[in-house]
Structure formats: C-alpha cells, structure tokens
Image (cartoon, rainbow, N blue to C red):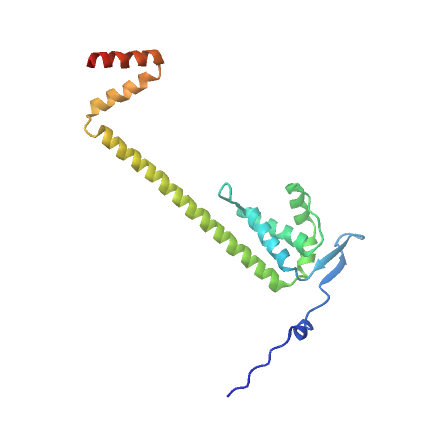
Length: 198
C-alpha cells in the first residue's frame, strides 16, 4: 500500500514567499518623482480592481454597456492598485495622464503577470455575467409589455367584440369630443339619460 504523502506545513510554505513585494523607482521622464510598485496586490485590492473596471464599463442603473471605457479603466486601476498614483477626478485629465506618460508601462513591467492575467479574466467574466443579467431583464420587460398589450386587446375584444367598424368610428369620435366638454355638460347628459329611462 502506498505511503501517505506528507503535507508541507504553512510555516515551510511561507518560506517560499518573496518578501520583496515592493519596488521603489523614479518615474520615467522625471528626476525626483519616486513611485512604489507592488508586484502582487492583496485579495481586497484585487477585488476592488475588478469592481472598478466593471463599474466603468457597465451602468447597471441605465442598463448601458460602455466597452470603450475598458482599456482606460484597466490602465487607471493598474496605476492606483499596483502603484501609488493618485488620479484626478476629471476623466479628461486622468485619460491624458494615463496615455501620455510612460507610467503604465513602467508599472506593468514589474507586476505579477499571472495575477494580472487572472484579474483580466475575472473582469471579462463579470462583464459577461452583467450583460447576461441585463439582457434577461430586458427580455422579461419586453414580455411584460407584450402581456399588457395582450390584456388590452382581450379587454377591447370583450367590450367591443360585437361592434361594427361604423360603431367603433362613432365611439372614437364621441370620446374625442369629450375632451372639449365641461363636467356640467357631461353630468347633464347623464341626468337626462337617466330621466329618459324612467
């Protein structure tokens, strides 16, 4: 019988950790701007990275997909999550900084490519999921509208089922004239009608 395989303890496993996770460099094209780059980010940072990019591309409230925001959002997240860059609130200025400096390339050259690739896959899967949810919600809304039209058609059929085309035209003309009538006139017609029945 085969001998049980001995497990590597957590303490021994931790010996394999690279303790040098942060690299300090001068930002390219500057002389005195020091940046710190994390090779690997933590689980909460990774989840925030994914969330930020997905939220930049999917507007769940309006059901809108904005694929053109994808690359820009990824680059911004790399600079803020893997490095210590602050980003301006103004998107035009942020876009200009992201694409007109070599900061992104400098950071990406040092980060854990396996983690980064997993993050991109997670973003893609989450965007696909959100689009599927939005699509199924839209389909269900369309079915609701169709059901309402069917209900209206059935009600109309019950009310006007035996009516001829001329009778329907007279009814529509009568309804159109109601908008110009005063409440007193309508009340008088109803009272006169009731008096006539008696």
